[in-house]
Length: 203
Image (cartoon, rainbow, N blue to C red):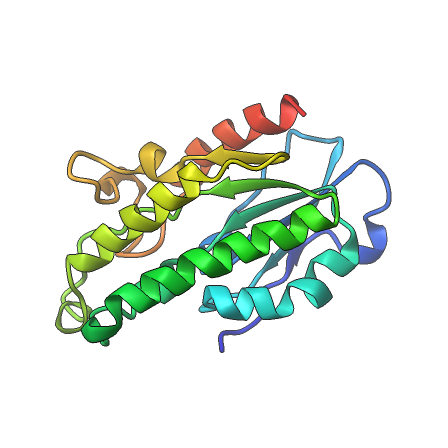
């Protein structure tokens, strides 16, 4: 398991305004949420390296117990990047990823929490060191999971199609947004924050 990277405002100080919890893996842990939304109180509850089943397992204690008004979810890549290591389990991995993401959303909705579901960020070209453990099927699986997410039709769920915002022709992560195969830079987060701000201001 990765190191917990809970960032942002201390829980004890989050009293007034709209309470927003960011949930997911390292991509969410590195997400600097918009500073201009002064009526929102941000709580980063993302943990690096976690899969969707791990996020689901800690959801009650780490997120729902804080009673946020909104949850922003970015997760799934740590499930899907395992496909090259277990190609015979490809369909199972994708199926479980979809099921866990839907369960996370459903558990939030049961608590009357609005959910902003961000599609799984695109992946970039693998680095030299990652190539022996990589497959083009990861990018295909990402788009498979994203098609499922975009098909969700639930009250109080809003989609932010981060994959469309960050990908270039061919569906891979645009070079201008990439730090490495899996992670994005400040420019990429600025693009996402513009879209997220528009969503939050419509609340």
